[in-house]
Every structure is written in C-alpha cells, then in structure tokens.
Image (cartoon, rainbow, N blue to C red; front, side):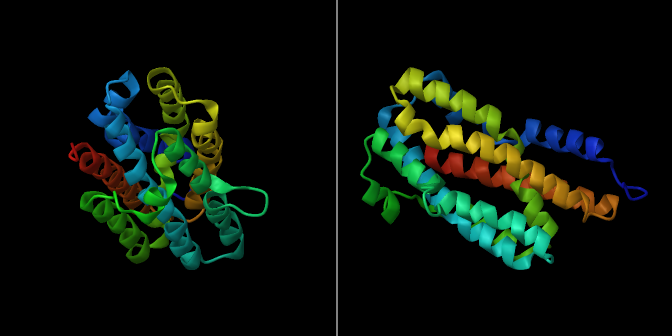
Amino acid sequence: MTVAGTLSRSAFEDRLRGVLEERYHHRHPFHRRMHEGSLAREELQDWVANRYHYQAQMPVKDAIILSRLPTRAARRVWIGRIVDQDGSGGDEGGLEQWLRLADAVGLRREDVESGTQVVPGVRLAVDAYLRFCSVRPWPEAVAASLTQLFVPDLMRVRSEALARHYGLTAEGLTYFSRHSDVAARESEQAITLLLTELRSREEQDRALDAVRFKCDVLNALLDAVEAIR
C-alpha cells in the first residue's frame, strides 16, 4: 500500500531509472573504450586489479548494512549477498570468479588479492562508500545498492566485448554471467524492502540521493583507474 504523498512503486522506479540513466557509470569513457576494444592489455589489467578491491569490500559493506537492519525478515534476505560474494559450501562465490577473470587477463591472483596494484583514488572511493553505509540511515544504505538495477544490461555488453576484443573465454567471464542474475534478484529485493519502509516523499528523495552518491563512487573509481596510464 502506498502511503499518502509518496511515490507509487512504478513512479519510484521510473525516477530511479532516470537517475541511473543520467549518473550510472555505463557511459564512462573508460567503459566506452573497454566495450569498443580500444583498451591496452595493461589498462584492462589495471581495471581488473583495482575493481577487485571494490568487489572484496562488498561483503564488508553488506555486513555493515546487515548489522543495522531492524527485522529478522530483512536480515534473512540481506545475508544472501555476503554468501553470494564470499561463497559457501559448494558455491565458490563471486570473488573467486573475479580471480578467474584476473587469471584470464594475465594477472597473478596473489598480487590481486594482496592489493598492491590498488591506487589511492580507488581506496578513497570504496572507503567513502563503506562510511556512507555506516553513518547514514539504513534505508539510504540499502538504496545505494540500487545501481544494481542497470547491472544486467552492462554485464551482457561487457561479456560480449571482453570475448570479442580481448579473447576472453567463458571460463574467465563466469563472474559476469553469474552477477547478471544476482543483480536482477537483489535489486528487486532492495526495492521491495525500501518501499515498505520509506514513509514520506522526503525519505524517498533521500533514497534517490543515495543512488546518486553511489553513482559518484563508481565513476570516481573509474576516474582513478583511467588516470593510472
């Protein structure tokens, strides 16, 4: 049920998509060059190594949010994000699949895991995101994850580009095929959780501002990688 004065689900999603269309990093110059095949091998390696730092901190971010969620039902949904990235039992998890990508582009996984190639700008962007999720109200931290709404299309474009232009095989691209489905499911979960919690138009607007902030984080990360060479 929509609270008086708040946007309906469809209207909220329309505004969310508008924010992402304007601010998401799908049109960043580095991504454009990646998708058209004009990155040097070393630039692609820079991106894989630095993006791993972001990926590795996502379970930390989700643990922060998990600790702040007020209901068992919400926590039972959110904990799956940590398991998805870190793995559990027979599921190797997203981080292991990212390390397969590192193998595929010619990096040593021990170097990637050690973080020796991570540049300060990437660390600052990731730290800013972790802090945001620690200090802002939990609905805003949840809302910041909604950049995932645009992930499935980006994963498809990226997978095709990496295979066509850089010779990566399915073994090295498993993260993207996995994350496309994961992101679609998790963005649906986050929207559902938010719209049961946001009680005013002002709160909805702050949630959309959180998405803008997350877009800035993602763009700052790419700016830092692009400046390496």
